[in-house]
Length: 306
Image 1 (cartoon, rainbow, N blue to C red):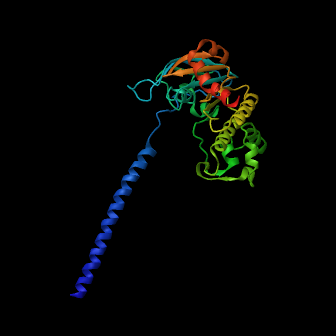
Image 2: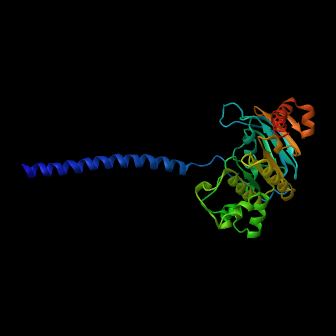
Image 3: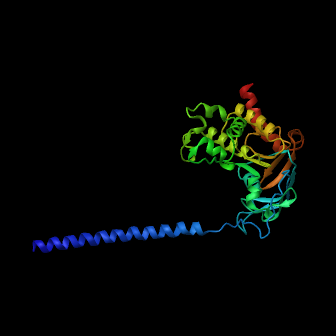
């Protein structure tokens, strides 16, 4: 009887282990199916049947009655936008949260396709340009800085692996990153953790700017890229950008109006529409919305620091 009970106990233990294994296997299968579904998903943004390459030279950007909605049948995020950004100009985009600023600049490198109208670069619709050529000529610094595990040098050279040390340092100096990089014991060979966890928000943002500057793009997009740095550093970055990227077309999205005062053209967005357009001086004379933004920000600063 004792032997029988021992044998039955061992069999039951084995059966319970098999049951647990079945639960793990079923979970793993569901997870694998989801991973494979993501891996097999094809992007809706693809090269056209007949691509045009080597067409982006000057970097002129034209929005021709552009509209955009994230999903068909949903409300439009952008409605009937038309403006021109000439080579060498800096275009600033201001507006409240949710007004469509990031959506606007995302249409230039075809992160999304416009649902109406056309986005032209040097006279060619971006949907007719090969994706590799299009994105290799555009430098973009997003709101969230994305860094990779590896050295600081490798992160800066991500878009141009063959860049020399001198080129890397020039881009870092323009982004006001060289000084803090050299403060590390290993300098440009400093190892970064995943997503740059061992750097502050401002340091990560400056490395991202250096990475974009290194490729000397025809079009440079800065999506609220200086919000994590102080006003003094922001001013020095702007001066360096003006000297280094004087032949490139620049798009600057900013929350601080001090970041856009010297822009060649300022677009004020409200609910996906351009409600005012012009230089700082012109908008101060003609746009009540821009005047309110200016007073609400710089007016308070003048009181605080005056």
